[in-house]
Length: 69
Image 1: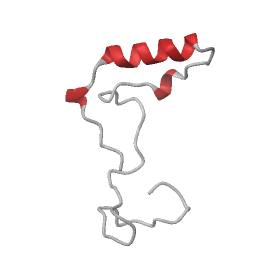
Image 2: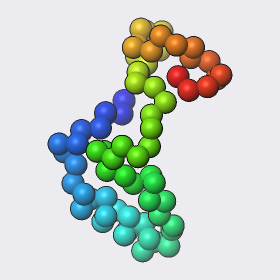
Image 3: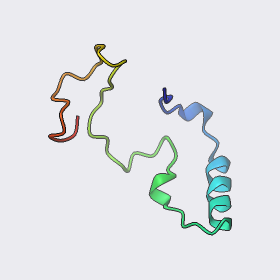
Image 4: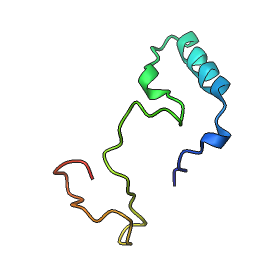
């Protein structure tokens, strides 16, 4: 299960080094995918999460493919 962002463990140098290695390998780095966990420039569609399949999470909206949920 993915961990939530934890800005206290963030090392900006790790992001820079990783991007440099990707570029050295001949790939294009999409800067928007490598933002710091404290960056607020990309809005999140919902402030909720789902629990284990069949369990109750904090999301009470429509969870079908009709839009952000």
